[in-house]
Structure formats: C-alpha cells, structure tokens
Image 1 (cartoon, rainbow, N blue to C red):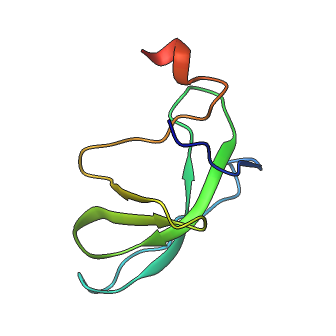
Image 2: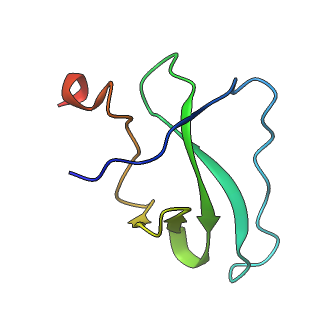
Length: 76
C-alpha cells in the first residue's frame, strides 16, 4: 500500500488543463474517486494516461484510480 501526500481543496473552482498534443506533459490534480471527497494528489499527466505523482509514484490512469487513505477500505 502506498500512502500519498494528500491536499484538500474544492473541486468546484479547479479547471482541468487540456492536453493539446498526445505527447505533452501537463500538471494536474488527481482527486479521490469517493463522492464528495476533496482530497487530491498533484502530479504530471503524460502520454497515454501515464501519471507521476509529486512523490515519484507512477500510475496508468487508463486502468487505475486514486482513492485517499480515508476511503480506500470503504471502496473495496
């Protein structure tokens, strides 16, 4: 189990940046998938759904989702 540094901020005002080119790398916030949770991790979204957190952990967003430590046991 990997624990991430969680930040909290409202999703309401966050505007997700768009990738103009398939190989461009953009800074994004990856929010917890639990409904109503505003916890997120910062990272870089790259080619083909690859996501690297600010801690250096890697995820493939095509096949995975982020759930904060508070909600990870409830979602299983």
